[in-house]
Image (cartoon, rainbow, N blue to C red; front, side, top):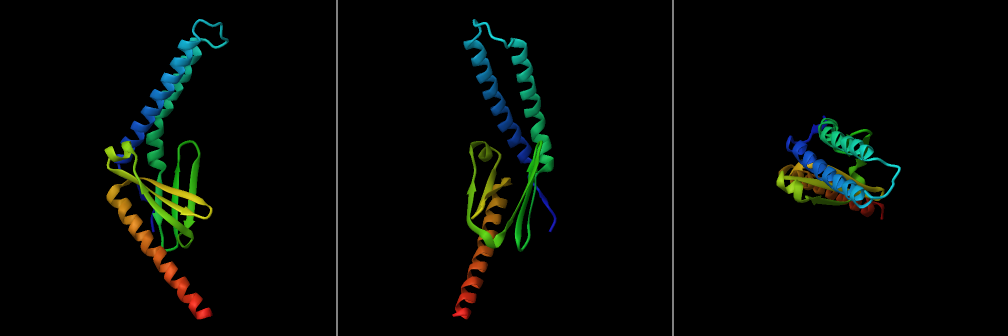
Length: 162
């Protein structure tokens, strides 16, 4: 099965999240500068402006790069998620190892009609982000059905072994 691309709404969601984070960074740096403005610091206001400019450039570029790199796919045996901005991370999880499935959506996600599916294994969590809510619900149902099939097959094997 081919890798699936996330919804176009994800780009807007990523952008809002990045802008909010940049605003928080701007307020923190501005507050620190304001608090220490009378002190004789080795850091000039010019360095603060450079740092803020870098933060804003990266935050405005990141959503476009992350959107283009984010991919996911399901096979009968595994879930495969690729994502990243500077570093690309790939998570491959065997479906038979899933312990828990959860669907979440934060305030910004809900504005864009997006959700995320979190699958938990003994080794940790894997999150499939920026899914349209209807797609996330279908994925949860599909995974739940597949997990139940594994559980039934495992119980039948145990009965045969006895």
